[in-house]
Amino acid sequence: MSSATDSVRLDLLLRRGKWLGYCSCDVPTVTELFNSANDDFFYSVKTNSAHVLQSYLPDQTNISSSHPTHAHLY
Image (cartoon, rainbow, N blue to C red; front, side, top):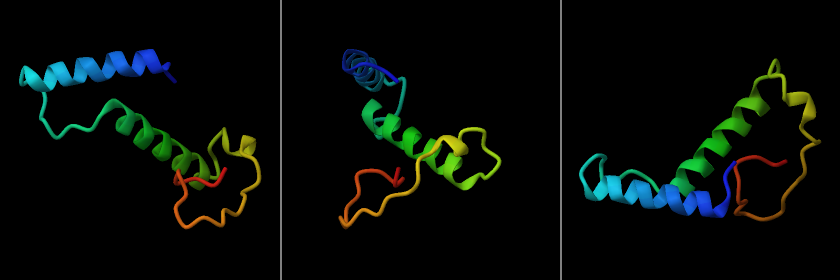
């Protein structure tokens, strides 16, 4: 978890790294990286019945939208 200020600072650092050639120009933004990590984390909790955090997930809800904002339904 990070604040909006932290995300902006990390994005600036990443852009500077791209500009200086320390990383590839096709590296995703910090926000995209955080969203991907969040989706991967919830997928691993949801699909691993032995995961210590699975029992803390609420019951699944049905979303009628065809475009959910996250890969998880919690």
